[in-house]
Every structure is written in C-alpha cells, then in structure tokens.
Image (cartoon, rainbow, N blue to C red; front, top):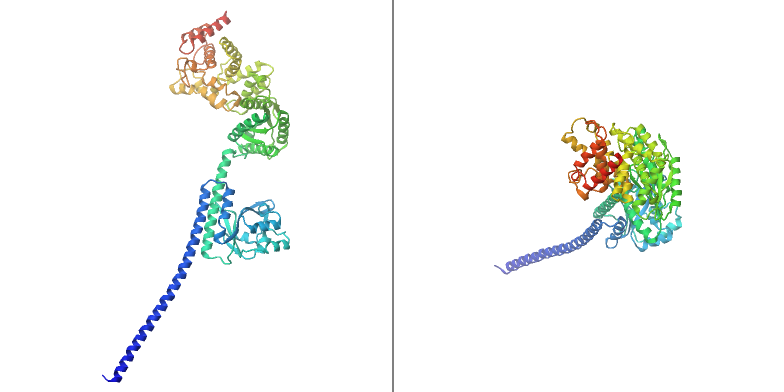
Length: 630
C-alpha cells in the first residue's frame, strides 16, 4: 500500500472515531437532558404526593372528629381550621342557607380563626357570624348551590356586596384593601339531597386545578356527612325527649327534669309549682270531627303552653290529652295566676271546624302542699279532676295531702276513668254517673250510688246499696286488725274499684248459666290484672291502691291468682276484699245459682279457713257477721 493510500485509510479511521465520539456525545447529552427532566418530574410528583398526603390526613381528621361524637359546632370549627395553612388556603367558612317570611338568607355557622377575617370584622363592626347575609339569586353563591357545582371568582368586591348589599362602598374598599387571597372558591353543600349551604375557601392561587377540584369536592362530601350525622343525632336525641305530635317535652323528660328540680328546691329551700291540664271532651271531638281534629286540638293547647311559658318553665305532654307545666321558683299564688292565664288563652282560641275548646286545670306546689314529690303529683291530678268534676274549664288549687279525703280520691278516680272512656260504658250512663259523682263531696251515698251503677253494667243482678255495705264491712274488719288509717282509706277505695276489670270481659262469660270452660275460666281470672294494670295504672294518685286490687283473688294457701302468692305475702287489705267479695257473691243472685242466706254463706266461708283465707281473718269475719245477724 502506498503512502497516500495509508494516509487516506488513516483519515477514514479518524473520521470513524470522530463520528463515534460525536454520536456518543449526542447520546450523553440526551441522557443528561432526560435525567434533568426526570428530576423535575420526581420533584413535582413528590410535591403532589406530599399534598395528597396532607389532604388525606385532613380528610382523616374530619372522619376522626365525626366518630368522636363531638357537638356539631365543634366539628365544624375544626373543619374550617384544618384546611388552612400548608394547603394554601388562607381562610374558610361554612355557610347555612335558610329562609323565612322575608325570603332566603345566609348565616355563617363556622369560620377559621385568622388575622384577615378579624380585621374585616373590626372594619364592618358586627362579626360575620352574627349577621343575616343576603342570598341574591344572581350571586356566585346561588349559582353554586342551585347548579350543584364549584364556582371560583376573583372578584372579591362583588362577592362581598352580594352578601352585604347595604354596606357602604368605602367600607368595602377598606375591608378589601389588604388581602392576600387570589380567588374565592365556593363549594355547594347538600345533606340527604337537600340544599344545606356553602363551603367557601379563600385561596392563594388564581387557578383551580382538576386535582384541587376533586379534593375540595371530597372534602365537601365529608362536611356533608358530618352535618348529616349531627342532624340525625340531634333528631334522635330530640325524639327521645319530645312528643312527636306537639313538640313539647314527653313524660320521660318531664320526670327526669322533675328529679333535678326537687334536688334544687331542697338545696335552696325554694318552692316550685306544677300545673296539670286536661283537654275537655276530647272523645267528643274525635267522634264528631275525627281524630285529625282531636290531634289539632291537642296541638293547639301545646302551642298555647309554649307561648305562655317562661324560658325556664318545662311544658310536657304526659300522654293523651294530659299536659304538665313545671314552674321553677313559683309558689301557689303565682302558679294560679299562670294557670288562669293559660285557661283563658285556651278558651279564647278558635280552631277551624271545631270552634272553641276548654281545659280543666289543677295546681299544686312543692314544699307548700307537700314535701313529697309523688304526693304533689297526686294532688295536682286530684285538683285537675276536681275542676273537671265541678263543670270543667276552670282552675283548682290542690288541698294539702292531710286534707284530701279517700272519698275525693275515689270520686276523682271514677271521673278519670269515665271521662277518658277507658271502659265500655254507654255515654248516656257515663254522664249520669258523672252527675252523681259531682255531688259526691256533699254525701258519700252519691259515691256509693255511682259505684253501684258501674257494677250493674257488668252484673245486671247487682242490687243498689251493696257497695256501701261492702265498704262498711271491709272497714269494720280492717279495724279489728288495727290497720292504720292510710291503709283503711286505701281499702275503702279498693273496695269500690276491685271488680272494675269485669267491664272489659265478655258478657257471655260473666252471665253464663253453666260452668265455665277452662279457657273461659282463664279469661275470668284476668280481671284483677286488667283492673290494676290497664285501667288504674295510668292514674298516678292511686298507685298504692293498685296492689290491693291486683291480689284480691290470692288464696292463703297459694292456689289463687294471678301471682299465686300465699300467706303474709298477700296484703291484708287484699285478703279482706277477698272474703268480703266471697260473702256478698254467695248472698247475691247469680245466673248459675240462687242466692244463699247469710248463715249459709258463713258456713261455706268457714270450710275454707286456712285454705282460701287466713284462719284469724275468718274468725273475726264470722264474729262481725254474727253480731249483725243477732
């Protein structure tokens, strides 16, 4: 190979090296540039990941608060403060949209604590949370709520003028003169698909990215869940203590509050009063106009109680047409004035279709009428039924417990049962009995006569005058055993009432001429329980009488009913009623047998001494009957 050929070959090799080096350089440059791009992407992704983590932690914080059963206001305050700072939001608030007779308006439920909002509040004087804010149909706020979309604006002046249209332009200018926010983001809030309000955030960024929109939507959903849970909790809590029909407190809440009031009254030696109220003629309203109007009458009374009660008074629907109002710190004189004001308000109220309604009212005062709250409640009920018995639509002040006779309690009990139509007695007869009962204070015979009439409803063979004889015999027997006056008075009442459960039994069983079947016998044995638990239990002031009636068919040897208790487990007063009832049943005509003579009845009773009744009781009973016969 010649010299020039070698030179040429060498040049070619040099060119190949140069090309190789250039190509490598290009690759190196591409790799370098690609690495720079990757570093930027990694940095961006890291920022986005950190932001996502912060958002997730913020959302988790909301969930934790919701699960902690904290009050709604506390949860909302934490929500608006949690979103600030590192996420780039300078201020946030939660707004409720409401409406009244003047139209829609907004109120700030919660707002973050920061210097900017404090400065604006100082400039506009009244804080935003205390103001009624306008809800203009053409505003950003209405657009967000009505169209269920996130709205962003940079026009802060317009945003402020929308909610405070009457604010002076100079004040608006001053309020917005120092701000760091670049945009206002408005997110709609819905609870159970019903518009609730708005979540507003003031951002340091002018643009709203897709990822930020997704985050704010998710964040708003968590707020909606928090509000929904709080609403449901408040609803359940409210239902637990309020009456569904009237919105007043229910019996449970009244009784719990009453315990606290008793403690306070004892500590401070300060009386309080209870007003008991019963709507007159509710059954007549239901029968003539329908139950919807009966409910309307009940709600009308509830509304009147709300209007006439002080903020510290507690008005409650105790059940049916009965209401109680507790008046802390009020003695009987003041309570009577309040009760009369309520009575007049009820009387003057005119209801659609029904017209005017009335109520019978009783008043009793703790520490004045009694220092036993159960007795005060009894006295309130007795006074209320005294008003009913004396013609209705009036207020009666209770008598001290020592001045209340067994006779008044018995009359009030019968009036209670008949006025509420708790037993199947013809309306005409019920009115006739009530007329007799209204005269019962002046003569006991009217009470006995009324009791005879009630007994004749389920026993057509019942003779007039029997109830008086039963009571007198029972009392004479009780005195033989030196029972205290209180027990004897309860015995008197129980003797008048013990068979009232028979009113609820089928006549074909009560009047059957032949022997009862096993099923009929079981049915017959239910009448003490019916009397005690269904008819009498709702009447608060005769609770001490109920056990006497419930156990008046228990035998000394444990073979009776309904509890199958024996011997001294059976109240002595119940034993007395059992033997008195047996004697008069034997000496009265029955569908299935003729009446026996007193001597024949006594002989049958003697045979069951030590079995059906106490031997000592039989001896005293026989002694009494023999004395009367001789």
